[in-house]
Image 1 (tube, rainbow, N blue to C red):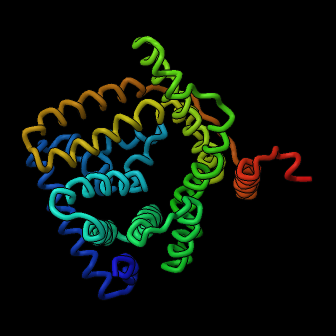
Image 2 (image 1 turned 90 degrees about the horizontal axis):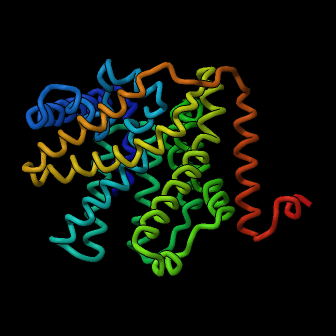
Image 3 (image 1 turned 90 degrees about the vertical axis):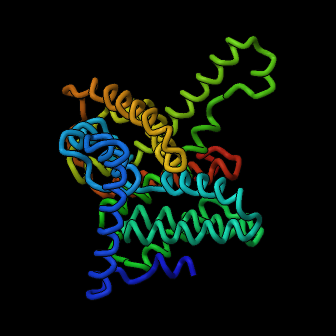
Length: 328
């Protein structure tokens, strides 16, 4: 039933118009609610973009584009995972077990239907739903299997999405995270928990921060391995600062989204959320400078080669052999 709601034919004439009107009304209501809570400045508009994927204010959009952070306002698996965790905890006070998971699926289905049939929304919803259904029926779902099934379901919904850049970025970057990122993690020796525990407190903090930084850097490199060639293919440029910007600002905006959701139940936290948003945006505006970028053009075939290389590296990791042995 939940999958049915997400697969409703949004592209049909009369029904599409009515559904679009409903979505527009609800989004306007939520935007008005955010303005009532946080004023009509850029904070409310930013929260609306983070939660619903609406257009950024004109003074913020160039800055997000320049720093390579536009993906933060595109609804993705991050948003669905965060909302799932938030609702899962909230529903835990009311119901338990399978009822809890079933209600969560319906809430996520409503969220996906509310947002519409964007490629990133469909991918995130299908992937999250498949994982929850696996949990519901006591089955383990491997991330790549979940990814493949969500890809098939999205193309069944509308095969023409395959030719959209948003689809290519969403699925391409996710594929890099699932294949290249684990391979890179395996090549770095991170300190074990046992080793960290026996160190002095100051050393523990340093090791934890260093590990977080190294893992975040590898994650950003994995994402850039697909974003870089696709950006050159589509736009002829790639902002180099985006690698560092994602390290700095992705965790901050993640906490901000969680805070906005949490403060819905506890409005007393609104001033703290608004102050945090002011601080993050002020920090981001420090980078409103001419930033270096790579300019040029690459063929889409190069993107395909990158994805094939990632597949080969992942297979070599899974088979516990090096790439040369696997190719032979």
